Length: 602
Image (cartoon, rainbow, N blue to C red):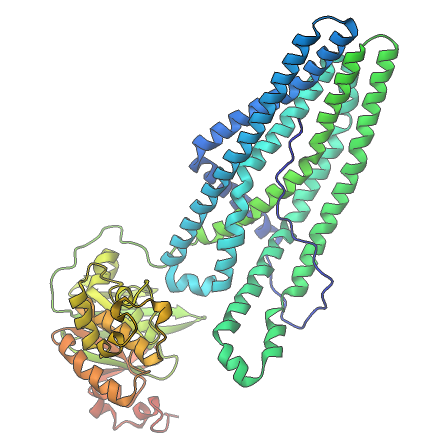
C-alpha cells in the first residue's frame, strides 16, 4: 500500500506581477545558506528528541505499515497461485485480508499520531522563540524587526511540524524500496540487477535539487518577512501616510521585495521542474524494463505467473520511491524554516544573568556610573562617561538629540549593558545583581508605555501582579489617573480593548505602574511629555510625594522638566559636561541651545 507523502509548502508559483520600484533585498552567501541548512538540521533533530516517545511509537507504526505493505504482493501471489491450483483459496484470501487490514490501520494511526507530533513541535518552537525574543529585548528588536519575527513565528516555526512524518515517510519509502528490490532478487536476481541500474541517476537528481534549491527557498522566506515588516511599519504610521497623501509611494515601498520574491519562486520552481521531469521519465522506463525482463523469465519458465504478478507489484513499489522527491522538497522546507528559527534562538542576549549573583543590600539608592561606554551605529554614544548621583536626588538628564540620554538611563536597569565601564547601585555593580532583584530596585516609566494585560488594573499592576485594588488605586491617584479610570465603563476592570485613551492618559497609566513599584531608583524617560501643562503640574506634585527619599532620573527635553530637578546631568560628546542645578546652567548659551533657547556652540 503506497503512502501519499505529506507535501511541503514550496513557494506557490509566483503570479506574473509587474515589478514595482523598491530597494533590492540583500541575501546570504552560499556559505551562509549551507550554515542555515546545517542549523536547521540540528534544530529539527532537537525537536525530534523533544518528542522522542511519540516519534518512537510513530516509527513502530510506520514499520508495521511497511512490513504489511511488503507482504501484500506475497499474499496476492499466494492467492493467485491458490486459485490456479484450486487449493487453499479461502486461507490465502484470509491472509491477504488480514495484511491489508493491518496496513490500513497502521496508516490511519500514523496520520493521527503524526498530527499530534507536528502540533507538539510547533508549540515547542514557538514558546522558545517568543521567550528568546523577549529575552533579547531592544537588541533583538534592532536585529529582528517585528514583521520578520512574526514571519518566523508563524511560517518558519510551523514548517518543521511535518518533519517526523516526512522523515519516517522517507525512511518508509527507502525501506519499501530496499524490501521490494530484495524480494525481486529472491524471485529472480536478474530483476534486481536491472532495477539497481536506475538507482544512481535518481540519487544524483535528488542531491542536485537539495544543493540548488536551498538558497532560493531561504530567499523566498526572507522576502516574505521583508514585506510583512514594511507593512507593519506602514500600519503604525498610517495617519502620517494619509495626511501626507503618500499611499501610492508606500505601496511601492511595501512591495519593493516582490520582484526578488518572484525571482526566488521561479528559480525554485525551475529547479524542481527539471528534477521532476527527469524522475518522471526515469521511473516508468525502469519499471517497463524490469517487467519486460520478468516476462522473458516467465517465458523461459524461470518464474511462475504468481511471481510475475508479485514482480510487477514489487517493481511498482520500488519505482514509487521516486516520489520521494516530494518528500525531499518538504524536508528542505522544514530545514529552511527550522534554520530561520535557529537564527533567533542562537542569538546571545546582550544582557545575561550574572554568573556569580550578589545580593543587593538595603540602601538609599546611590547611583554611580564609572567609565561607561556604549557603541551604536559605529560610534560611541557614551564615551567613558562618569556620573555620581547622590542618594535621594532628582536628576534630570539633558542633552542635544542623539547625545545618549535614553542610552544612559537604559544602562541603570540593564535594559542594555555598556561595552565598557560599570554601573553601581549602593556600591554593587548592577551586572552582578540577579535580574529579578534589579527589576524591583529600578522602576521605569516610558514616553509611550505599553498596555500589557487584559484590564486597566492588570496594566497598572503588571510588574506587581499581587497588588491589591487599593494599592493600584493609590498608585493611579498619585499619577492623576484615578479619575479618568473610574469614568471608564467598568472602571479598573475595563478591558483595555474597550478603553480608548489619549497619549496623556496612557502616560499617566505608565506613571501609575512605576509608582506602584517599591523601587529605590525611578527612571522617567520623558514620561510626562504628552501631558498638558495643568495635568503635568498635578502629576509632578504627586510624584514628589512618591519620589521623596528615592533617587530619580528623568530624561528632560523641556526646560521646565529640568528646572524641577535637583541637578541636571548635561550630556555632550558622550560624557557629562556638567552636573549642576538648572538655574546655574541656564546662563550658558550652549546649555540653552539644548532646549532650542539659545545659539549652539560653534
